[in-house]
Image 1 (cartoon, rainbow, N blue to C red):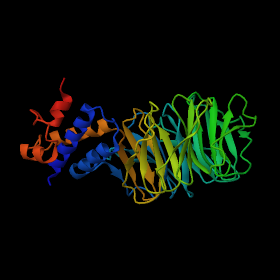
Image 2: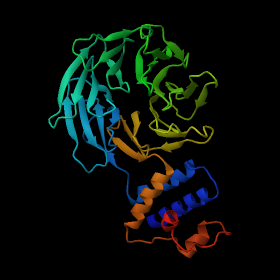
Image 3: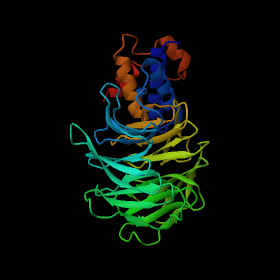
Image 4: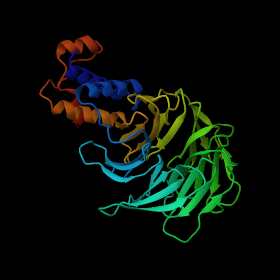
Length: 383
């Protein structure tokens, strides 16, 4: 079995699936394409630069990311593996969370009990200590304006900082009742802050009245991660048991459960359209869920050799970036059409065959399909 033949066969199956009105994100087709790509040109993997990768945030350019690691490093990564990665800082404690301001000019990192800010506009990146708390900081998130930074801690404290001011005190939010905070996230409009608590479910604060009692979602669940849909109308909670619960904030729909992970869901990310949800788990896998067809099988991305702590989409939603305890950062195509386009580019750049032989066509394809005039990549790019 030749790698080029496997690639061409996977591309033909993808074309056939699309032509017959099949699922655009069919898990079996995606896996066939991914396996074929792996045999021809493995997807980028960054390793050897850090210890366990605990946190990731992708820059607006989609080609670089900020990573935080167990050995106290904050690194600006070139995701294609071709560029030079840049150390932003090295600290004596693990970096358990990172966050990027939407403009991409300011990064935040949680180092033990401290929160540092990094000005990314300067060639020689400078950092400053923003705050120090009574307990380890587990999670960070900027709001859409880039003015406010939320920080959640092991002791249940949630604090809100004005990053443009050295004099305004942090606002402490009530409601976590000393439950360990595992994740924080702002709604897209910045009007709501979501907090994942290890025993208290998900808590939602109205930023117009942050001192008020928060709303509870995903009640009774040990929530390890939380994320808002891009339209702000729903929230997803990742549980310690491996389930993902989606809750409509309008209250019109009953909570829906996505099941498949076998262990804690440590990180969640919606793509820009809100049609895909990525999840990273301690079971060593990353999954991509088709929210338009939640009953369908999720795409499973294997490859990490241990717990996966972080996952993020690039801004255009074409790629996923994940990092874990195996000390690796992996970059994945996030959609079938992106993967098939990449595979066609690899096939075109190789000296091998560009079309299945008639013998292979008769062997693998349905008997009622006539042998095509062109290969699958020509057919894909045609009118």
